Structure formats: C-alpha cells, structure tokens
Length: 374
Image (tube, rainbow, N blue to C red):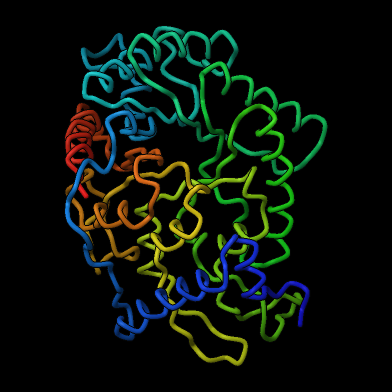
C-alpha cells in the first residue's frame, strides 16, 4: 500500500469515532447514495422531528461583513445610506444581529477611522463601536501564512494580537488549506496548519478554514500515475476528510459554508476507483459535522435556490428564500445553540441600480434566521 493512501479504520480513529459510530455514519451515507438515481440527481435530507423551539438563539445570529462590503466601502460624503464600519455596524445592530465576522479591516478612506483599521489603534476603535452597539466579533477572513519563517510567524502573531483586541474567538481564512488534489500537498498543509493552529491556541484563539465545494471533492490518491508521477484515481476520501483526519482537533477548526457544501453534494458525487470503475458517493454535509461537531464552531448560513441549469446546481438567495433545508440541517448537526452561523450572500450588493439592497437583504435574512424552529 502506498504511504499516501488513507486507511478507513485509521480515519475513523483519528476522527474520534468508535467502530459502531463510523459504520453508522458510512452506512447512512451509503443509504443516501443508494437512494439517489444515477446521473446528476442528488439526495436531499427529509425533515425529521417536530418543531420545538428556536434553532438559532438571538445571541448567535450573525453576519459576515463581506455580505455588505459595498456599504462598508462606499464614500459617506456622497450618500445618505449607511457607509463605513461604524454606520453599517449600527444598522446591523438595529436589525437584530449580535455577531459579526470580519472580512478584512478596510473601509472607505472618508469613513470615520480612515481606510485601514488593521492596527492596534484601529482595532481598539472598532472594539469600542462593537461594544457600544452590543455586537460581538467572532472571526475574520484573513490569511494564513503559506510558509513557516520568523517573518511569517511574527506577522501571524500580530494578526492574533489584533484579533484579541477585537475580542474574537476565532481567526481564519476564506481559502482552502491547499487547492491541490494530491495527498502530499494536503499532508504538508496539515503540518503547517497544525503549527499555526497551536500558535493561535497560545493566543487563546481557534484557527479555522472556510471552504467552497472543491474542498469536498475526492483526493487523487491511488491508481496509475501520470507523466509527473502523480496518482490519477481515488480511494473515495474527500480532501477535507483527509485534512480533518490529519490535523489536531485541539488546534484546527473549520467553518462550513453550508451553501457550498450543498453545491458539493450536487457536483462531487462520483469518483474513479483504483480499478478504473466509477463509484457513486453522495456527500452529506450534516453527517460530516455531526460526527465531530465541535470542530465546526462557525458556519456560513448561505441559502440558495436549486437550479439544474447552473453548473453549481444552485443560485444564491437571501436566507430563507432558497431550498436548503436549514431546519433539518441544524437539528442533525447536534450541539444545538453552540454553533455560530454567520449569514452570507456573495451576491447581496445591488450596485448603482440598488445601493441599499445588501442591507435590505440583511433584514430579510435576519428575520428568516430568527424564525427557524426545530
């Protein structure tokens, strides 16, 4: 067996699952796959249980500021609409949001505080606004160093210092640990993330990666080698499954973007086995989280309408106006009320035609997030 191959029992042990738990999880996924017709059809979970209370407590209703990036970046001298961090945070607080995830610390230069608040003074100012508005910052989509050197470690420590001033519980990135399809690159990424994850823990923070659909595609880890000596087929292990199995659960965490996880369910359902045969394996996002729910402290609660004419199978919508069954998802992942779901919609900004759209969508989405019962 190649050293890069992944043994399923080994994966189960690393994930902290007993044999029965692992078999139950894999059986459930296999059943979901069997229930799905061949081709592009996808199995979707059916609602279970009875509505019995609020699924997302008021204190956990959040938003990533990338959703309203147009408002944060516009010139307050040219509009009466909320502009810049202070005014936009005020509007989000009035809507009802209580948690914030940053997507960087820059705004329009004419907004109070100036363009760049990624400094000790800037973070202190941001924290004062958050406190005045009853908001709690949970994380930031920054960047994780791609190498480990004295300089990159020092830069990471500075980012952690800013995070602590802001009162963040988490520090992370919007990118995958690596874009590679090959095990060797994921092994290297896991080692690097373990290093910086431990460093973040020493600062009292949880290091997290946010992922799109490709991170749930299958590793190329077996079969004939190509001209560069790389494997061309798969054992059926998904990229993030390998990452979870090979990083320290005390120091490395994930933020599942639930929309992109459902896109992965739609797109990444078949792999080529070592013998060249196609094998269907439908991804179940909620099952992945439920098996190790504490490793997913953050979610992106992004909604989408199913549309088979689109490559991704979905079109983004305000929360509650799509087809993703969030009530069932939140019931299935367990640890009710402990996760931090941040609403996100990449397409919320309305441009010059509708400059108030992103904040209008924020109100609609908050109301629908608050209405979730289960």
